[in-house]
Structures are given as C-alpha cells and as structure tokens.
Length: 155
Ligand code: SF4
Image (cartoon, rainbow, N blue to C red; front, side, top):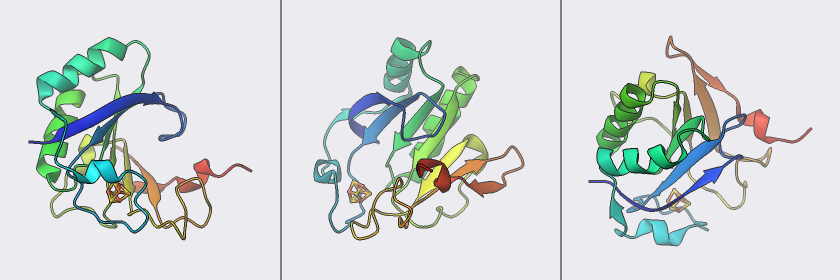
C-alpha cells in the first residue's frame, strides 16, 4: 500500500498545468543530497483510491492535473491510482514523478500524460537547471514520449 506524507497545489512541477502533487513516502532511492529525506521513511496516510478521491474532490474545480510524486517501490499501485483518476475524473491529466532513470518493466504509460524520470543529483541540479539529469516527458495517446524538460528553463 502506498502512503503519502502531504500534498500541495503547485504550478511549477508540470508546465502549463495546475497540479495536485501528492508526496508519496517509503522512497527506495537514495539520491545523494536528497531534498526530502523524510520521504524515505515509511510514514503517512494510506493512499487508497478513496483517499485519493477525497483529496481530488476538494480541488477538482481548481486543478488540471494530478501528480503522484514517488512510489517507485510499488509501480503497480502507481498505475492503479492513475487508472482510478482517469476513470473517475476524465478531464484531469495524470503525472508521475519517478526517481528511477528508466520506466519499470511493462509499465502502462497510456495511463499518464506526463512522466518524470531520473533521480536527484545535487551536482546537476533540479529540473529547472539546464544541467539537470532529470527528464520530463509528455505522453501522446500513441504512447510516444516527448522530452519537454526545456520548458522548465527560463529563456
Ligand atoms: S527520489 Fe531521491 S530526492 Fe526524491 S525523495 Fe527519493 S531519495 Fe530523496
């Protein structure tokens, strides 16, 4: 069962979207210089589909996207939650922030509109630095992944 520490309405994590970002705990990645070490702990509330709907229902008129931040230990649960969002809130986009550099085996990217890949490397910086190792992709209905990381970089 995935659990989450907190959530926020954010404008920067997914370009051009107003995003309900949910911070999932028990992160298995051990990025050197981790910006959120508390998310490595197995703490927080169970992120059931009912809990997720409870969060979305509070903000459904204000948001355009739901982003699951983490969950690399349980990619099947991440997919299950994205499927729930797609089925219940067809107007909302779905996103996943993974700390892995590659997608899990047999991962269904059709459940997502955006996927971020890559762990945090303090020497390369976060997504808004052109030196970053992380990549944000938009996912077309065909499944084609387009790297849109440069949208984070101010001209
Ligand atoms: S993906 Fe890396 S930076 Fe993010 S919470 Fe996990 S260890 Fe920390």
